[in-house]
Amino acid sequence: MPGSDGIQVAIQVPLAFIRVVGRGSFKISASLKEFAVHALDAGCRRIVLDMAECVGMDSTFMGVLAGLAFRLRAVPEGRIVIVNLNPRTRGLLATLGLDEAVETHMAGATPADLEPLLARGEALTELPAEERGQAETARTMLEAHENLVRLSPENLPKFKDVLTFLREDLKKSGGAAPGAR
Figure 1 (cartoon, rainbow, N blue to C red):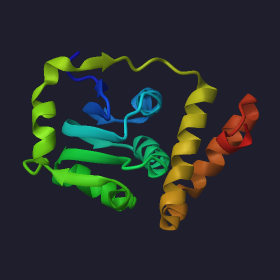
Figure 2 (cartoon, rainbow, N blue to C red):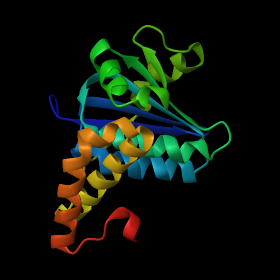
Figure 3 (cartoon, rainbow, N blue to C red):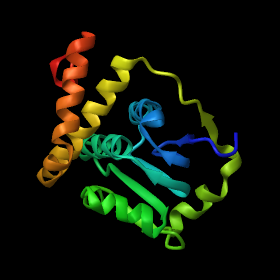
């Protein structure tokens, strides 16, 4: 649907490809994480995000990317590559220090080895953003914001209240926090 937020994906081991359409937000973050974990389990070592159609990102989405960056550090040659950034989306990454944890490329500066993949948009599959329960959404959001604080301690003042709220919300709903499993 035009105007809706979503992700389109493909796996070509050792590469996983994700095109972000619309806004990278908490609504698609759990689907993003599930796909990326599946791709890593399938043997992918590099996750490439095409942001040409992305209009913005929220902190949950970026926190999920931070968590994936941490996970990829343990994989030989593992990394996240983000291409086709515009000044606004590049600035969002820099605001939270995520630009230090991933490889970034502005629009028009895509590495030559990725150009053929980017041109094959027809090979992408739309990944549905499935409705998640309140507890699962809160767990994803909490884990994402904890990742951002782990990435850069300067993020703690920005997210201290969010973290407190999400932990309380999970406690009330009976859902376990990510570290409490």
